Length: 587
Image (cartoon, rainbow, N blue to C red; front, side, top):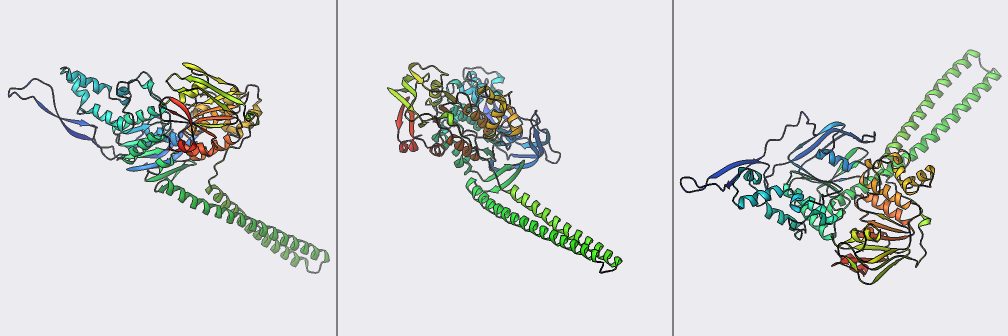
């Protein structure tokens, strides 16, 4: 999978002396035999890792370029990788992890690499110990404890005799102690699945750790635990995230934009300050360059006027025949040559001024925002949109009594991971039947799940939107998609090639442009996988939505930007209404 560079030496093998006692028959002295073994890559042993790429290029099978000739290296410490959605951050991490093959250039890593992808999925049939990758060692330990002295069991265990204790301790540090090692992965929430995958990586102790939006689906308590794990990481760590608190723990920022990386020392706050200073300087340069272009245009126009006056004067002198013909010819040629040089000089100056202006404009970051009006989503004030009549969901969350939502309320659904927020939304959307009671929706509804599986990866963005609005013309679909920043060829990209943020934007467009227009919109952790610019885009898109909104999220700043009017909390299996002040302090 990796293409080695000839100038980077291969990593030396890593070894650790491990002493353990086999459960063998006593020797002649009555003592059990002591074996000294050397094991490569044993737990607890770490060597410095590094990660580098040279002339790295990648193009999707449909011809869409992502990276072209990127040179980059990561050394010890924590690096925050930022950039607008679609810039290639997730693709770069997959290339570094060896999960994608470059179309050009190569990647070289020393040490073991662990990768936490953006969308974590677990086989629901797996036990927790299988998800952690320790099931084989646990089974071997059980066999040894029961008296089975087969050499294969000792080879399986290696020197990791405390694997269960380490696994339970790791689960405890991440707030997953309640899971145990024998529980099925299908019983864990989306946030717990992320933490479980992270726990597996922490147990592996790779030299290089790549994290792609690791706070997706995590509640505030879980985020703090993940922050602590990142802060304590001793090796090379590269993290892609929209979580400002997490990015404030890094040592440096790598800004991936237009296929190139610009480095900034310090954390995300320092990066923002530096970027703001750069942008102010870039905008001043643009204004100066614009003024220079105007000046050069004015001087060129004046030069042309002078040339025109000279030409008229020459013609007048020729008509009056006041000078000899040969003198007039020489004067004319000299004037033409001088005029040509003068004109070329001013045209060159204007071209240079325009080039400087183009460079100055390119230095200014222009992150487009979604601007969309959705009048057909409007719900009259006070109209019922949803009635929850004492329902109890499949995983135990319940509503005591009757709870109604009316238009155009904006309701936030908060609570710890695993309390049943997603299950409640799926029940309201009709994907899961309630165990008791009922959920009645009175208006057209659309549900945007965490996994964004409303899109068909084989279809283009435009074709996906057309599925939800079959009576809309192609021109109408494309015109409305342009407002979601899918213009021209971008609307023809297959959904399977979109970045996390682009995929979210396409899914949001498909639902909000659907026919009939949704008057109740359910969103489950909508800021997952979105960079900060995309969160602003989402907020601006929802500003044009006039229906009722029910949003499950742990992102309090985002919720408050939506103008939330009611707060609902699921706690201890019960859904109840709380105040904003309680919500801010809620987990």
